[in-house]
Amino acid sequence: MDVSISQDIRIEDYNYDLPDSRIAKYPLSKRDSSKLLVYRDGEITDAHFSDLPSFLPENSLMIFNNTKVIQARLHFQKITGAQIEIFCLEPHTPNDYLLNFQQTEYCSWVCLIGNLKKWKDGELVKEIDVNGQKIIISANRLQSLVDTHTVEFRWNNPQITFSEILEAIGELPIPPYLNRDTEEQDKETYQTIYSKVDGSVAAPTAGLHFTPEVFESLKKKGIKTDEVTLHVGAGTFRPVKSEQIKDHVMHSEFISVKKEVIEKLLSHTGKVIAVGTTSVRTLESLYHIGTLLEKEENPSTLKVMQWQPYRENSNKILSTEKALSNIISYLDRNNLNTLIAETQIIITPGYAYQIVDGIVTNFHQPKSTLLLLVSAFVDEDGATPSRNSWQGIYKHALDNNYRFLSYGDSSLLLKE
Image (cartoon, rainbow, N blue to C red; front, side, top):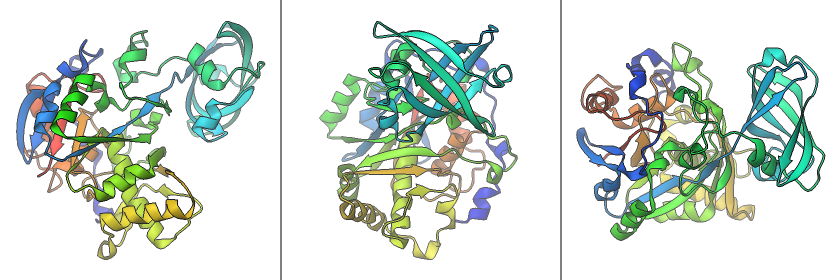
């Protein structure tokens, strides 16, 4: 992998015309009735999502992201009447998601702030009802870093957790490109049916198409399934504004993978199918965490940096088996059952996939890092427009009335 080739990519080469009319503003009433574009080695087939199991290779292992979207938008009103929105992105103190959600009386978060110019300083205060109890919650802005801010929350009831506060007064953060307010039905439709672990501010939307019926069909075909956790940050909405991808800074995301899942990946002999780009980033990050552990047995932090995969010496690339074995050894040495790490990985054309053999994914925004990830998977030559490239796939989807983005249709991308 040549880092200079990947970094010199012009984001304008990953632009396409997406009319607003093609963006799905609402989901279909039945999740698995959505359309499914199947891409297999340059050939495209149109189907419905309920048909997905029939297209999967025998003995596949599907990996799902079980993160759950939190009601991360909090609304306050100043004495002047100005409305301030605080969008909680990731926990600051404590910086562990579970511990932060369990906090009583105090916690802090890294946030985006709406109408910031009206909140120069001072405390925001709000009386709220949580589980039938009246409490007072306050918000104070502690520090600012570029476009994010650390906000401290305090409330006057030691029996109430921050998780309960979010559940009581928070608003689910649907994507801004839907150009509408969050509605009550989004609380259900913008969650996968297998979501479990609170922490995301955006859904892993490829998973929104799965139903109990699809899972039953997967089981009948003998398709194995398992789960990882990647908490999706607001960076997933952030467009690439630089001309070249080397000037774009990827957001960092929290990942959690149980030891038994890594062992399953290590022993699995069939194809590995990632459900969603978040699962792709998690699985591929495992490989590069394994390379870190090859150099240092017990590093102080486990984090895959943005360009790390492209700087690794190509003559010394580990086998996937060795990389995964390194993680298992690390967990055993430290008496851990779960790998907790961070990833800032960016997957662009020129990236060599190490674990993922297939991807279930929706259709992504123009000039997005997610589109680069798709191109890295399907394009062999950096993508001259053809049926065998992301351009060909997206042209087919546009020409055949596929619905785009979070609530839209999906694709199954396979390489034999």
